[in-house]
Length: 261
Ligand SMILES: O=P(O)(O)OC[C@@H](O)[C@@H](O)c1c[nH]c2ccccc12
Image (cartoon, rainbow, N blue to C red):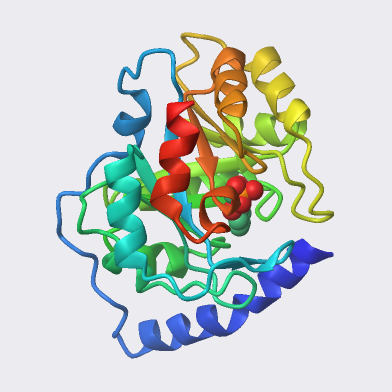
């Protein structure tokens, strides 16, 4: 199971954080005004979905995507091209990211999402020491509404929103039970890595109503302006795009192309 491998790969980091906590040396939370991730998703944007542009150097499905591109430059290009938020892969083993990318991508001032496998309160504490405005919680990794709730509330105490990722109706029920306000539907099953965009669209059509007080994000496999229109039509406030922006080597130009057509 790939999900189990993702979880196992986080154990050394969690152990190291435990040791730091034991000697009272956990990194301190950054006392900064974090731009609101949720507000950015809810801002009026015509009929277009907001784009959360992702810095993704490599992935388990694609291997290396774009290894030698500076995160500072990607942040600048994405901001100029019209991204509403940035997503930063910080997972080291499978996605070749690192926590330091958050600070390195903070200059344009867009809300930053920490994309990683987060299921322990010490990882939330470590996120609070970065300029992240949001962090990812994945229901399949933490299928426990009480734990999801406590991780989300811990993040929110630092002004950090939780983006709660689901794949299907059962995940959605757990996410809602945990009090999630930001729902990300991943069209890519993290165990099989298969992408099904139409299932992702159907889920929002069936379960996301205007007035339900949730912001929904469509994630994975998005590579064309039509995909943006379809997501907006299904009720999504935002789309999250990684690979198709990075793999041509010109992330800003790729985002412009996606938004112009
Ligand atoms: O590269 P894509 O197909 O545009 O997909 C991006 C995003 O959905 C993906 O990076 C993602 C969504 N959920 C995750 C959880 C962990 C790691 C990565 C992800």
